[in-house]
Image (cartoon, rainbow, N blue to C red):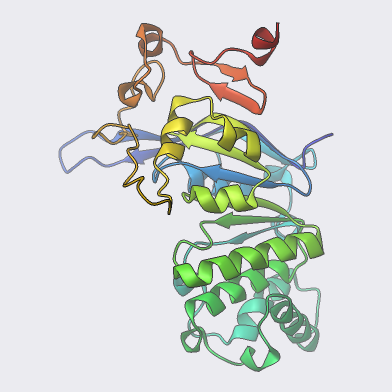
Length: 323
């Protein structure tokens, strides 16, 4: 089955200032990512802050041009697609509803803005469709003339979701859509996203650092580290049997409510990864408790696993294990 979204060799670098008299450095935010997103699935992308998740999302949306590589939507390079055509098929939901909504516009105007940009409906039709989109996300019509400042955080994020849905897109890219919300509200938004997916036949790219959220929502998971995807596979199998040491450490760091377990130890050491100074060989080897000499000299290639693949020298090919 062909993929709805195909990313091949996707990379993005930034030139970063290191001070008044220092030479500018090159930041490799995303480095050679290959990724497929299939129709109807929820692809979760996880990793520590600064690993390149949001940069990858912006390139998939066409908001940020890649330094190299391509993104194709239904086989067509998004760089040659008209912006309006791309926006009709793919929409974002951003992390912070406090900053992603215009405080000077009323809710109906905010939700209807994508329709105004498309220029295909009258003002009355745009308002009617905006109110219908608000109803889909659980906001009654009485909120249509409110300003964002009159809404709670959860209600604002519902407005952002309604804005994303008003053009009836196929794909919604959610970049940490619940991390700015109270814990009590997060589950409501997640359940809303699940219901919308089932009712509207949506495809999600869901970015989060919360592994519990991703396990609940995603059908497949991609794990990123320093701009690379180090493991990818079906959610149930990846959480049950993680193959890459970084994935294992992430799952070991999850705090559970079970009594007596205490605070988990992530086994990642005290040093944080430096994206301006990516080590030779496997980027994870300075923090990896299982690293061997090979890890310091060669970048690992993806190895097929039962769930998908893992880019690690220590992972045995699934076919070899079966033999």
